[in-house]
Structure formats: structure tokens, C-alpha cells
Length: 426
Image (tube, rainbow, N blue to C red):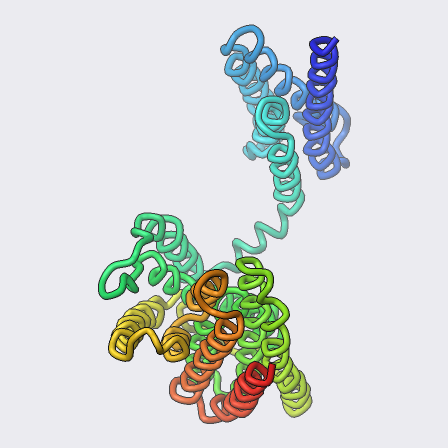
């Protein structure tokens, strides 16, 4: 009875997967049919019915490869490719249209049907949706290519090079005194700085100055508000009228850092949540609220025009310099800890927070489970966050314009003082 039940379930699961293969082919066919709805029946290479059947055929090919012969899938794939090639050549001779998009749609429908049956339904469904969206946005994609400049394409390729090629090759382990030098983590910071510069460039170019700054700031707050501060400080020198708006962006990014710190710490050691909640909330609000009023003032006081963007979207020089600076700070922090001994938990937090909050946040949270009290861990995290924000305030004042430094300094100092006071009172 158990064997019969198991077989019944397996058969129904196979039928369900074949149904999904049919529907995924139909989804691609729906888009293809709609985009060519003005053509007469028979003029299209393939419509909704053909794509649905090809998707089902892909599922059957995967099933046959598992049960009969492994040659079933490649043989049927070649057959579909041959049919698509004949249809494409016939149509190209008739209408002088050499696009192979329709033929590729058929092959993708076939492969997605096979994936739905033999690999994973979720992967196949996601790929089908993305495929349909790409096919449906033909005009938008072509328009984007016309607007894309040579330096922007070059920047995108360089970003991919330093991210997906170079980063995985670096060792993810510590070297040097106290093993504080991790090549992977240092280069990851370089990638973050470069990525924020890249995202910020296109956000301002596409959405305008105001919306672009907001979007970039929220994005950076979840990754690296330090990198954003460096980028916006440099931008304020290039576009001085935007200094007040860039200051708002820095405050938003720095405020968004605190929910991230709270989530990471809670995930590692949930009991720390109650003690950490109020200090971080106070620090966040004392950055968000001034940013809101400053935003209204800056928006009301002058019209925010789209700046003329001439710089390289991916200038790697500041990112590489920051990587060198980060290395020096991490070494200095380790030497300082060794010099003063193990009693300097708070000093270690302050020196580590100068470079990065996440590392000391994770370290202190883990220590709170075994060797130190939650209160000590909380105070250390707040000190690290305050030190990090002090460094960003210095960046804004030294690298950026005087206006940027003044707009950032006040809320930052009030926020860190209130956070330290709240942590001490709790």
C-alpha cells in the first residue's frame, strides 16, 4: 500500500511539473503573440499555442531522458532548433527581418519546460518571468542602449571585473598582527565604494538630483554609509549647489545604519535586542528627523536642477585610496589594543568603529554569549557606532564643502551624544 501511495504521489507530481512546463511556454507565447497581434494568423513563427507545446515538449524530453535514454533531450532540442532555423530563414527571405528573437524564445521555452520537470520548478518559473519581461520591454531596452554612453558601458564592465572576477580570488582570512588584515573584506569595501559611486551616478542621471540622492542614500545605508559619505563629500566639491541635499543623503544613510546593526546583533544573540533597541532608535531618529526638515528647507529654498554629470561613473582611485586607509586604521587599532591590554573593550570598540561597525558588532555580540555582559556589549556597539559617525562627520567636513560639513556635523554630534547617554542610563 505504501509503494502504491508513493507511486501515486510521484505520478501526480510529474503531471503537475508537466503542467507547469506547458504554462511557462504559454507565458512566453502570450508575450510573443501579443507583441505581434497585428499580424495575420500564420505569419508569426510561433504564437501562444506553439510556445506552450514546445514548453511541454521540453518537459517530456527531460522525462524521457530520465526513464528511457539520455539522448532524448539533446535530440529533441536539436529538432526544435532545426524547426526554428527553417522558420527563421523562410521569414527572413519574405520580410527581410533578420531578428532571431522568436527562434530564441522557442528554444528557451523548451529548456524551461525541461528545467521545470528535471531540475526545479521555482528556477524555471523565475527564468520564464524574466524572459517574458525582457521580450516585452524591447523598446525600452533599445532606447536605453541609445542613451548609454561609452564611458558608462566601460564603467559597468570594470565594476563587474572587480566584483565577480577579482573578489572571489582573494583569500577570506586574516593576516598580519592579530590577523586583522583580511584581503577579501578590504577589497569588499573597495567594491562597495565603487558600487555606491556607480549607483549614485545612474540614480541622479535617471531620476534627477533629488530622487537620485534619496535612492542612493537608502541603498548605501544597508551596505556602507561610510562609502556613501566619501562619495557625496567628493560630489559636493563637483556640484557645490547640491551640498545641502547631499548632507541630507549622508544623514539618511547614517541613520539607516542603525536598524542594520540591530538586525545583525539580534540574529546572532536575540537577548541583546531589548538593551540595544532604545539607544539605536534614539540615534536613528535624531538623524532622520533633522534630515526630513533639512530636506524640506532645501527643496523649498531652491529648485534642484539636474547637474551636468561629466565625471567617470566608476572612478576607482578614491575606492583604492580608501582601501589603503582602511588597512592603516585596522593595523593602528590592533596595535592600540595590544598596547593597552585586554581591559580596553571600549577602546577596541572605538578604534574598530573608526573603520567598520559590522565587524565589531559581530564580535561583541558573540562575546556577549560567553565572556562579557550584554550591557558591556551594548555600550561597545554604541561607542563603535558613535566613532564611525564621527569619522564620517570628519570626512564630510574635510573632503566636502564647508556647507556640507556644517549641515552634517550638528545632527551627527547630537545623535551620538544622545545614543551614548541612553545606553548609559539603560
